[in-house]
Length: 106
Image 1 (cartoon, rainbow, N blue to C red):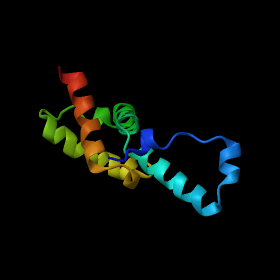
Image 2: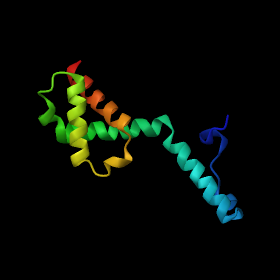
Image 3: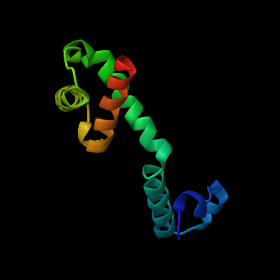
Image 4: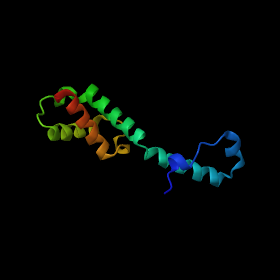
């Protein structure tokens, strides 16, 4: 099975300059898709959202008793206040809210 993270090694400038524009674009797109599907990329995005929740929304969410209510309202806050929230998947927003809730409730 093809995995662009391992099957597409990084290329040097000399190798890139020897390729056609079409080949460079295909290579770049495949690497970008591989990066986006990388678990480390996902973890970084979740941590960014969790940090934002802690810094900007936590005071408004402290009265929420259960994790589901906390997640629902945290997602509402993120939708209103977080820049470019549409580039973050719904599952990442939920994971970030759960991360913050468990940090302060366990």
